[in-house]
Length: 191
Image (cartoon, rainbow, N blue to C red):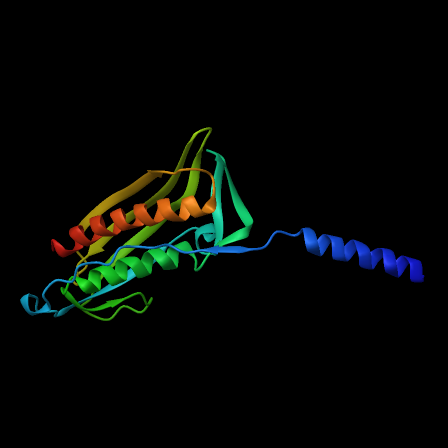
């Protein structure tokens, strides 16, 4: 019995020592230039609604093995789920324009608000061989306070990565998100 206990203890300690450590990755976006708020009336409010598949609503990093299969990393995570990071980046950029007095990400939409609907499709590493990319894809739709569609677009950003490392993926997706946020912001403030 004692011998069995020692064997189990040794196996557990060997297993614990060989487990890889979990790494957490962040995105880094450039600061947005604020507009002069005095030139805007800041009367409008905007609500951002995000829809995302389940694998993009959790923190583990996702990468595509083939056009038909995704892999979820066991030991590499984003600091927060991709849908939340994207929503926050868009929220910050739109508020900084000076056009809106409130940019909300709550599911409760106040009367008279514009609504920006984002349908997240991809936030992953793709490719094979030497061609590895960070890919971000989503649809956006801007709806007026009287429920008229003002703008819609499919936004896809694909950034070539240096290697398969998740640090390279974080850098690539940071660049992709920065480009996408600039595009969304330009489309929204045009109205």
